[in-house]
Every structure is written in C-alpha cells, then in structure tokens.
Amino acid sequence: MKIKSNPIDQIVPSISELRALFNGRVIAPDDSRYEQARTVFYGGVDRRPVAIVRVADAGDVSRLVSVARETGIELAIRSGGHSNAGHSTTDGGIILDLSDMKDLQINVQERTAWAETGLTAGEFTSAVSKHGLAVGFGDTSSVGLGGITLGGGVGYLVRKYGLTIDNLLAAEVVTADGQLLYVDDKNHPDLFWAIRGGGGNFGVATRFKFQLHELDKVFGGMLFLPATPDTIASFLREADSAPNELSTILNIMPAPPMPFLSEDVHGEIIMMAMMVFAGDMEAGEQVIAKFRSIATPYADMVRPMTYPEMFPPEEGGYHPVAAGRTMFLEHVDHSVAELIMDRLQSSTASMAVTQLRVLGGAMARVPADATAFAHRQSKIMANLAALYEKPEDKEINEAWVSKYEADLRQSDGGAYVNFLADVDEAQVRAAYPNGTWERLATIKARYDPDNFFRLNQNIPPASQFSS
Image 1 (cartoon, rainbow, N blue to C red):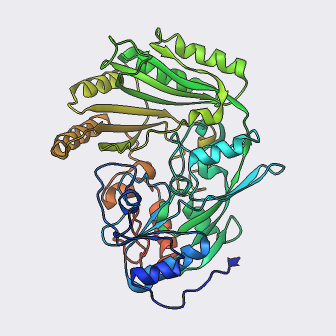
Image 2: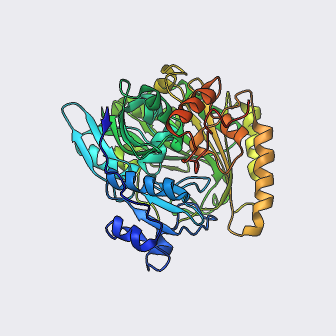
C-alpha cells in the first residue's frame, strides 16, 4: 500500500524559498528563536544548521526529504532531540524537526492509538492514561516517540509488555525517494521488520500505530537504599526473580543533595531504584517489601500511583554532558558489585552513575529474529556514565569509562542502539548480531541505496559495507 504524498515542484536551496515552501515553519540563523531551536537535549553538542524546518505533516516531511536529496544538503531528523551521538542536529545542514506533529487518535474499543512522532513519551502516556491505557516507552518524559520506538524502547513496562516495538502494529514512513509508505506485517514487511530496532536508517517515521494495554494504576516510584556489594547483588537477584509485572531501573551513584535524603548521606554511593509493578496493588506491595527488606531505606517513595506519575516534568535548561557506554551483562554477583563500587568511588566526575536494568519477561518471549532488535535473551542492560562540566575534563572521563567498560565486560558483546554515543561501525554492528546487520544492510539498499539517511547509528547499504 502506498499513500500519496505531494511531490516537490522544484529544487529549493535558499532560505527564502524554503520559508515560502514550508509556510513560515523555517527557523534560520537570523531568527530570534534560532539559538533555542538548535539546542538538543545533551550538552556538549554545539552545531549550527543552516535551517530548522518544523514540519506540519507528512506532506511537509516528503517535500523536505526531496529538497535535501535533490540539493545534496545534509538532513538531520529530530523527534525529541535525545540522540546520545548528537544525530538530531547538523553543522551546515537542515534539521527536519517533528516536534509540531503531535496528533493522537485513540481507539478505546480496540485499544489502539495512531500517534505522530513529534509527541513525547510523557505527552502520549498522559493522554492514553485518561482512558486507563498505556504502552511502554523509556523512562524520560521529554524523549520523542520517533527515536525511542525506532531503536526498540526499553522502559518501565519492558518485562510486563515488552519493548515499545513489541507493541507497534503499523507505521507510516517517508523513504529516501520522498514516498510515504504504510508499513505493517503485510505491507512492506521487510521495512516493518527493519524499523523495529534498526533506528533511523530507513526513513522518517511520521506516525505509529500502537497496541495499548489496560493499566489504570501501578505500584511504583523511587526507592533509595544503601549501596554495598551485598545490597547491590541482592537487589539484582530480587529483580530477576520477581514477577514479570515488575520492571526496575537501578542507578548506583553518589547521593545527590535531595531534601528527602539526610545530609550525612549526600555524596555517599547509594542505590536509587525506579520501580514499577504493573499489576494488583496488594501483590505489588508484597513484591516491593522484598526490596525494602534488603536494607533500611534512606527514602521510600514507592506507592500506588497513576502510570504518568512515573514521567514527572523535567527541569528546563538541563543539558548534561557525559562520557557514557552501554552494554549487556549476564549477571551481577558480589564480585561484580564490588567492581562497580570500586569504579564509582575512583571517578573524579561531578557525577558517576552505573545504571542496571534487569530484562527478561515479555521482551524475552519474542523470537530474536522477529525484529531488528536482536537481544531478546540478554539478561541485564548496563549504562555507565561520567557527567562533567568542563570540556577539558572530557579526556579523563572518557578514559575512566572506557576502562570501566573493559573491566565490566562479560560474554554478551551486544549493545542497545538507542544508548550508543558517537561510535564506530564495529560498535554499531554489536547492536545487530547473528545476521541482523547483514539483513538490515540488504533492506537499506532497497529503500535507501545512496545512504541518504546517514545521521544515525548508520548501517550502510549492502553494496557499501565491507565483509
């Protein structure tokens, strides 16, 4: 099935012609909005596009893709602007900004929703929650639906309802030739397979159709516990053996100066756990009790709540700069927990964090080759980060996190594409093991043979990559 799109009539290289073509939706360096509009979520990314086009609909997307392809100008795609590698912006190119595309059509009877990809996870979650429904995204309110979905989507409901892509029923995608395609398991099934984990390599997703799940309340919130090798290992054991209704995100880090934490704890290594039990509240209370018994909590904010409360508003102007790595682990026992504590205590960063997400459950029940996300049997996702303020501190923090990653590495050599920073091809390939890379490269050659969509964790077309 092919959806008709408006063809471009001419090549439009100038800002004035762009402004006319896109109905005043173009922001250029002479615009007072430019500095804010070019800013992305992560700090340390200071790029100056020649224009930012806030597209209004799929027709705009098709026209802008055609303009960029025919003029040869670099095109960056931005949904929420959370790319770790800074792929949602460009130096000297054009940003295709989806943030004004926020249409949401909810079918309560069928429990489905068509969502434009400029919506954020927080906006979508709040809207469908009014009907007692939900789908899992990540753990950050301001992340855009476009990027998180195309990479997989590992969030608060991963063990209960799987990855975001496991709840994706269909999509509309503008490909490199400017066509708007409807894709699902019957229409362009190869492309549908590829966009479920293959990132932005294959086109601009303008709308997604999601399967929703009944979820009125969760037993969730933050639990702060002392961090020792024993408590860390105990937490991971409990999270692994817990019912699939429970998903956790454990951050091991120095305690921030939060008002609900005692001052004598500030700066000490603690466990800050984000907990979501998507099931019966009484059962959730019993499950969380096991974590509360690991050690006397410093603070306990886990309670019955609506699911959108897990996505609180974020501080405006927060643009963290970090050296980071992502990886999968098979286990975190006492010795691994000792290594984590040792590495965190040795960091000179303003904030060093080890984040651990126990996987499994619904995510693991999907065959590894069913989608381009191939890490279905991975046990624990680990993210290592060293936050810093001064550019001159980059080298020492990169060295710290590189050694930490090497020391922590186990036999699972995979990586989650959405958490990769600015990496080389070998590291991108790690996100697509066991023939997934080769299959994606073949599909890339079919839909984007010239590698027009290259500002991403790039998979070159089959004829371009080396064997």
